Length: 173
Image (cartoon, rainbow, N blue to C red):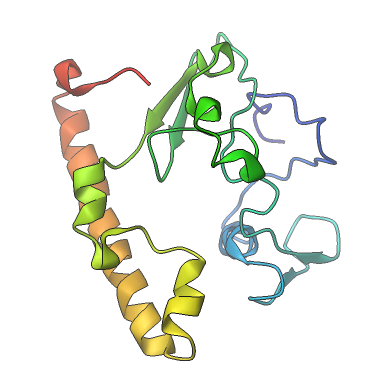
């Protein structure tokens, strides 16, 4: 069995399944599969039988009550923006964009707005791209692949930073 989750997973029906080489890509694809836009992923290795999809509908801002654990004192959370907004439908409410004590044990890694502005269309790829590009799958894929390549460069910069950390670059939420 894997390590215990760093949060209480009882708000939704939750089952913890260890990620393995056999199920990682299936789990990732299911997590990104937008209901009624993309096909669900069936029968993920090690998980209960069935069809899986989410696409961020459950909540793609995991503003959970992270627990402090002696064996894992922080939760490292790579995210697509610098705010963790609880509740997908609440994202327009600016007061929901503030940090809370629930995030005290979490370190957020997020791209800065200047980096995002340099991406195609000046934004991260998202569901609106399906409408923007319509049936032009190649154009949508080109934009998304460009963003993935830039994200890889960002990950490489992070790895380089970890070799000689400069804590002056760390900012409060």
